[in-house]
Amino acid sequence: MNRQVVLLAAILGAPLLLSACASSARMDPYRPGAMGGAMAEPAPMPEPVEPVPSGPVYAEPLPPLAGESLPPPSGDYGAPSAGAAPGDIAALPSPPPAAAPSRPSRSALVGGWTAREASGGSCRVQLSSTPALDLYKASTSGCSNKDLARISAWEYRDGEVYLYQPGGAVAARLRGGSGSLDGVLAKSGAPLRMTR
Image (cartoon, rainbow, N blue to C red; front, side, top):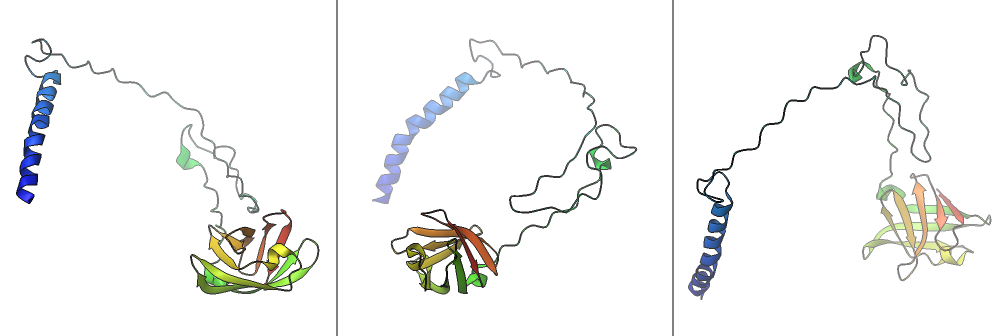
C-alpha cells in the first residue's frame, strides 16, 4: 500500500517539478538566451547619500500610567546638557527608572474580604483556592446587593479580579493589591471596594 502511494506521488509530482524548472529558466534575466536572447544588464548602483546634520536631541520623561504618580524629576530633561553636541543623545542625563507597580499573585488574593458597596452596606466575600472548572470557587454572606449575593466563582487575570455569578456572568471587576481591591459592579457600574 505504501509503495503504491509513493509511486503515485512521484508520477503526479514529476510534471509539476519539470514545469517549475522550465519556468524559472525562462525568467532568469542573467541566463544567456533568456528573454529574447539578450543578456539583461544589472540595475545601476545608486549614488551614496550624504547624511544630513540633525538638530539637538531632547528627552522628556514619559507621563505616569493611570492611577500612578512619579517622583519629581531630579534633572533638566528638556534641554541638552552643557557641552552636548547636536545629535549627541549619550550626553543627555537619563531619567530615574520608574518603579513598576507590583501585581499580587492569585494565591495572595485567596481568603476572606469585606466588600463595601456604594450604598454604604458591607458584606463578606470568600475567595477560595478550590478549582471550579477553569475558575475558582467564591462565596458571600450578608450581601444586600443581589449581584454580590449571587457570586459563586472568581479568577485573577491580567492584574484584575473578576467575580462571577452562576452561568458565567461577570458580577464585578476589581484591581489592586493583596490588601485592598477597587472596582465596579458590572451591571450598575456602582463602585465596589474590597478590603481584608
